[in-house]
Amino acid sequence: MTRNAAQWADLPRLPEDHYVNSRIYTDPEVFAQEREKIFARTWKFACHESELPLPGDFRTLEHAGIPVVVVRGPDGTVRTFLNACSHRGAQLVTEPRGNSRHFTCFFHLWSYDTKGRCIEITREDGYKQCKLTKDDCGLRSVRTAEKLGLIFINLDDDAEEFDSYAGNALDDLIEPMGTQPMEVFHFHRVLMQANWKQWHETNMELYHEWGHVVNRTTSVAAGGYHERKWKIHPHGHGSLDPLKVEYDKYKGWEGRQDLTLPGLSPGEFRVVDLFPNTTIIIRATTVRIDTSIPIAPGVTLLEQRGLGIKGESSTDRAQRQEHHNQFWGPFGRNLAEDVVFVEAVERTNRHGASRYGIIARHEDLMSQDDEIMRAYYRVWGKYMGASAANPLNKAAHREAHREVA
Ligand code: FES
Ligand SMILES: [Fe+2]
Image (tube, rainbow, N blue to C red):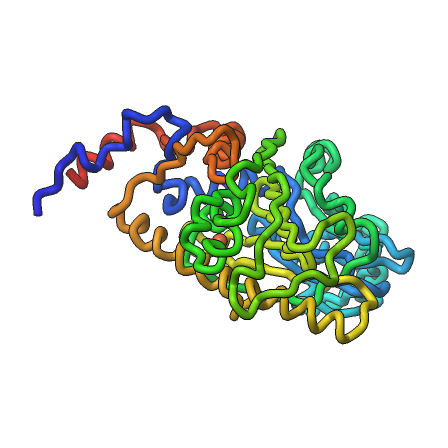
C-alpha cells in the first residue's frame, strides 16, 4: 500500500489546541523534558495519611526519577526526604514501606532519624580534621503538604504553596473526605504499556464512557448526565458537577442506598482531576485515588487506592469494598477496560501508525466536552515551552513526515 503524505499530516484544519501529536506519548526527549519541567516542579500525590498511622511509618516512591521517602516523625508530622545517604549517596531505604525509628545506610552504616537528622557517623573522628559533623549531614528535605488526608510532595523549593496550586479544585471533596477520618483499604499497582498522560486522559475525557459497558447503562443514560458541567480550574485541574448514577439499572448492582459518604446523596458521583497525574473519584460510598509514576515514554506504573471510613464495622467495610471492587481494583470492570483502552492507543502510537489524537469536542462544557483536556494541554504546553500539537521543533517534525511519506 502506498503511503499518502497527506494522510500522515497533523490535521491542519483543526486549531492547534484541538489535537495532540502522538510524539507527546512516545518521544524520549519529550519524556525527559516532562521530568525536568513538570514533575520536578509540580505537586505530586504521594500517599494518604492513613498509610502512615504510627510514628516511624514510612513509604518510599520515585518521583521525577528521584527516590524519596515519606515518613511520620515522633511528633506526628509527615515529612519527606530524598532517599539518598548524605555520605556517598547510596539509596538509604530500600523497602517499599515499613516502620523504623531510624534509617541506617547499608554501605558504611551512617544513620538518620525520622526527622532526617544524621545521628550516627561510623568512626566519626576521621572527619575531625576537616570539621565535618553530623549536623552537616542531615537528609535533604522535600516540601510536603497535607490536605484532606492527602499527602503531596514537591521537589522544587521555589514552587508555589500547595493551597494556591490546588486553588478550589478540591472543594467537592471537603465534605465527603473531610468530615470523618478515612483510610486506605485497597492498594494495587498496574504496570501498563502506555504513556502516563494517556492514563490521566481516561480520567478526564468522559467521552470514553461509551466504551464502558456498565457506564453506558448506569451513567451515560442517567438523567442529567449530559447537562452537568466541567469546572476548569487554573493550573490544569478540573472537577465536574455531581451526577446521580443509576446503579439499579445494572442487574445485580442494585442497592447502593446505604453507606453514602458525608455531603453526598445516594449514588452520587464526583471527580477531581489534578494536574499533572492524580485523579480522585467518588462513587457515593467509596473513594478511588489514581496517581502514576512515569517509567518510560510508553511504560507507566499506576498506583490505585480505595478508601473507606476509618474504624467502621467489618460488615460496612465488606459492603464498601464490594462497591469498590465492582468497578475498580484488578478485577473491577472499569479499571481493566481502561488499561485495554490506553494500551490499544499506545500500540499504534509507538510505531507511528497513529500520529495524532483529536480533542476537538465542544458541548458547552458539559460532561463530554474536551475542553478539560484542552485546558490541561494548554498548561502542559506552558510548562514545556511547546504545544502538544508540535512538541518538538517544526523542522525536525517536517523531516519526520518526509521519512515516512
Ligand atoms: S553511602 Fe551511606 S554510609 Fe556511605
Ligand atoms: Fe474509564
